[in-house]
Length: 467
Image (tube, rainbow, N blue to C red; front, side, top):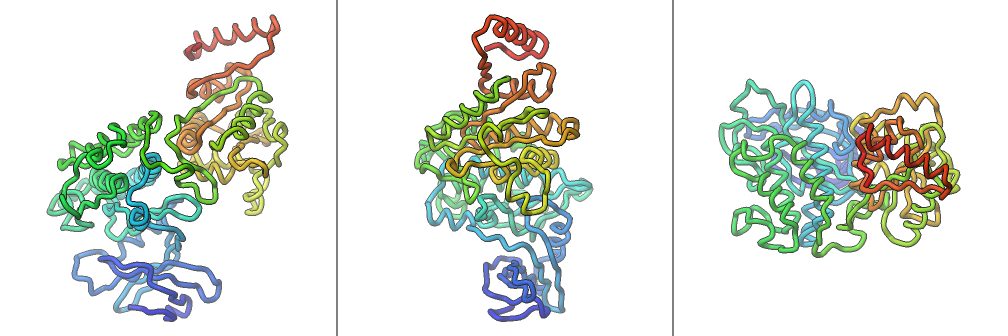
């Protein structure tokens, strides 16, 4: 056990104790030479539990995801193993619950979607899926940047179908799935159970370890919560693993459907959510995606006026890959300043988010951080700029679909600007994925006739309903 001012390996000065769990203590430390802050997890080798002490660092060191801490150093002596990881400055959700009592449904829904995304990354890891096994509010950090971080992989394991009896009792009582209490095998469904219990506590403020020691329907405590989220949590927390969701992807699909419903969320404070420095505010507002076809001036003016007339977060995405114009129309700089400073020269905002979508790392916060902004309007976010012609073939359709999905989660109104070409895949995808499509044209006879012919083609050949 280390105390304040202790120096570890002549490199790390211990500043304070951050927390303590069944696997050991976690300290805040400073690298003496660099002045950087790190979290150091101390694992005692005298622990009586039959655990592979190096399992956590061995798992973490091969993972690469923005919601997961990175391992930078492993130090070992006769008594302990010390794992040096990213220090995440923020607040754990158990502390936030203590301060707030319970959290608004719109906020919890966004948390659920982000957690599903990181669990999906773990569960699809090759060659063996990784089962986290310790989901609970205290292991979820809301960072100052507004993003979520999942910490403490002390009891995570690789799933192997030829190991049917991998479990002695391990995990946190109340959050651990029934199969973690004996000789069964933990699986994807195990993480889904713990996630369901976590969402239950965030919405109700009721710990599974307090009376009545059961998971009652959440609307027993708050009738203002939606029936849809109640059903989802009920399915996640069924006792028998086959009765739960069998994949995080299926759970994520249902969560997104809840997000599209217009629900009245009791206690939802204006501007409350995973906003952080990026400035995104999540509400129970019925979110919309609009596509403006072949009229970038109209689309830019619509986005500007919507942001000016409200406090909603408006995202404008210029998807004309051959001739982006939104930055010119709105008098914005060409490239995101933050990323220029990091040396990503000639990378437009659209380049960065499409690349992140391709690697499955895209989040609403990254979109907000990447977007161009006007100094006089903090709620208008603009993604534009395919300034290198080779990117026209580099971008792929799946990346755009992911971008639209993330935009829907993080912003109140998303406006997609597309070009006139009815053969352009980005144009067709945007028209098919939007809630409404706008064709703002001049009332000239030749223009109307041309537009009507294009609309007929879109209906008959691309199967996009005219309404």
